[in-house]
Length: 128
Image (cartoon, rainbow, N blue to C red; front, side, top):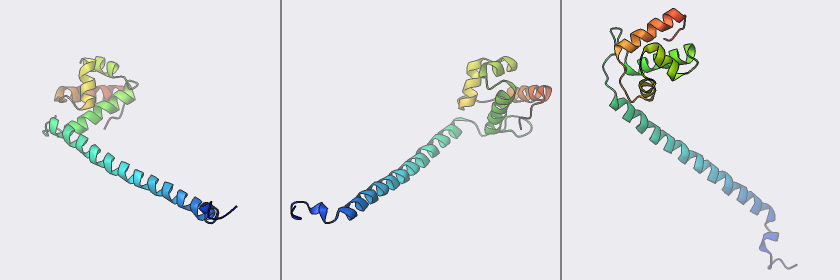
């Protein structure tokens, strides 16, 4: 077989290394782009959520909306088997309202936070 007919026969070893290098480089570039996009889109999501909720304290302890949401999530997960319906029943609120609090779509008022703290104390659950 003539080498002019098959130029890969001469550089067969380097051709495979080039191919591996191209694949690895492409994967690295893809990973960098994915990371940058996730940071850019993740930052926008957090900013829009924080703009929709008021920045004022919920109760006399100075609890903010983020902390109040965390209290409710902890109570739900630790005392009500992660069920929004059971938490809603205990708080005397509709399940849709509890789901909206978890999604950051509605403002959590002081009555809910006080009830959550009382329920946690009665059940012996640590939420803060």
